[in-house]
Length: 327
Image 1 (spheres, rainbow, N blue to C red):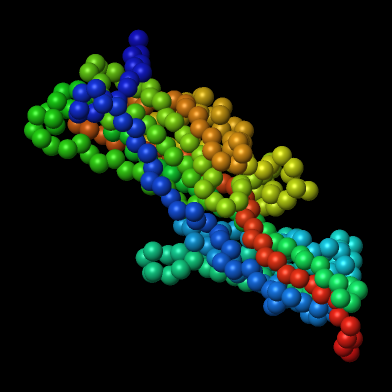
Image 2: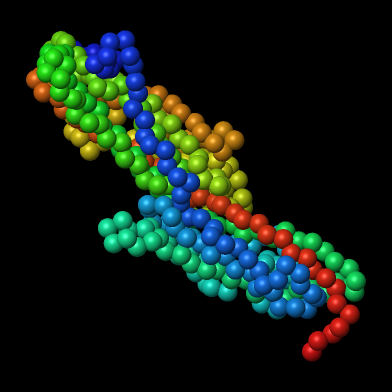
């Protein structure tokens, strides 16, 4: 009969239990470096430009990047001849910045060459609407930036027989160092495992728990796509109203000796919801076959998430009526 053991990990100091954690990542991904307009005070009939500069500061290429400007009423479009008369909106001057295209790509920084991540500028050129002389209106326009991004976290698990653990302890040697690597992304995935795993009986299968924690560390929120891969435009309310604060996740291993448990697959068959746009976690099990009989061995598991992310920035300006008509 096949022997299966559910094993807890034990470290060299008796009675102490520790879990491996991934390092804290910075708030990275695509960031809005600047969002500006020509003047903080503008007059009726005056040309007004809005510019946003976007930069990829993470470690993954950003795809399907586009931007939209919100917070100006329809009167701004009525005085701007280049507005779309059907939707009453002004598209960016740069065609690739528009949501009705596939957007553009921002390559990630390259640590090998020392190059920074790509940046891009999107522009909106308005004409300020007419209002009564001596009147003023304060506006707080904001720019929203959408992009498709990815998070990948890889963690190692150390397996070793009890006799080997005792030998390492008695000799004063150290266990193999465990590694945890993760992309710099606005969504952080933390993998916690009971490692190192020690066992003292002959067994051909080990079952061990894995805790996955997903945290939103960016200045925005993620969205998942129902049918699209990548989930382009899933953060737009008209595209998918129930996609906000959710990510698609999968747990995989390239090691033939590791089987991802059915409960892990069941959990990731549907998008993971982040309550209040912050964090969520779950525990599932993986199965490891053919554990080593004499020397330590390390195995790796990986968690991946693909999502669209939305971030925004707001400015203010004041529109004033003018008594002077300029031709």
